Image 1: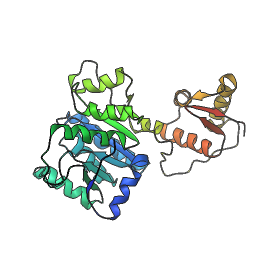
Image 2 (image 1 turned 180 degrees about the horizontal axis):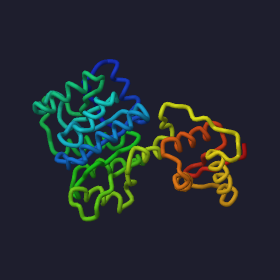
Image 3 (image 1 turned 30 degrees about the vertical axis):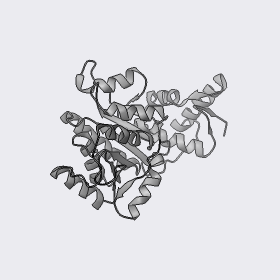
Image 4 (image 1 turned 60 degrees about the vertical axis):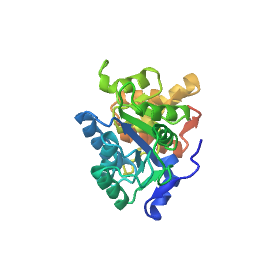
Length: 281
């Protein structure tokens, strides 16, 4: 159910971010008391993402993982949106108020469905989670315990066919038991690094053009020949199968997905639902 109203804090130019959320939004969600390594991973992942594509980092402005995501987005020059479960005029505490000001100064937005003066209820945060989960292109769960409210966001995304990614963990680790639950129940795909997001964003690019040689013995030509062989054998193949073969042959994830997108653009690879096929050049 869409929100009845949105109360928005930010500049007039920043309002355009809302229209870009369904295609460019990445929700990053996790524990309010995360492990130090989780904070470091969030920072490094968002830094790498910023080099690949201008996504919008979305989170809930809670302490911990949410704040780390907003801070990393600002530091990396990515726009960021904070979605609150409380009214905009509620005080968030000194540290989070300072972060809120930085989000706005960097051209981001702070939004809420709750009108000023409304008394906050526990279910308001669950309702907020549907926005975090269903109005973006993908959701990344960085750390969640088994009973974490973060899982509510992931469920909203999964139910609305939004790709969910979760950091794998050592089996039995209670701090990431929620991540493991999502993976075990196939509600999320394992997230090892930003290259995994290429399954949700074909258009990820590193900003440089690749030159494709015409010789039959180039890596590009060999990969296209494998795609043609798979097409001839089965009529089509899953992207993951081509990725496995390419990585085994020494491709790096970024150039690989850039190559896939270029071949889709020039028609040498064709997409039909979840399957790809190749046609001869």
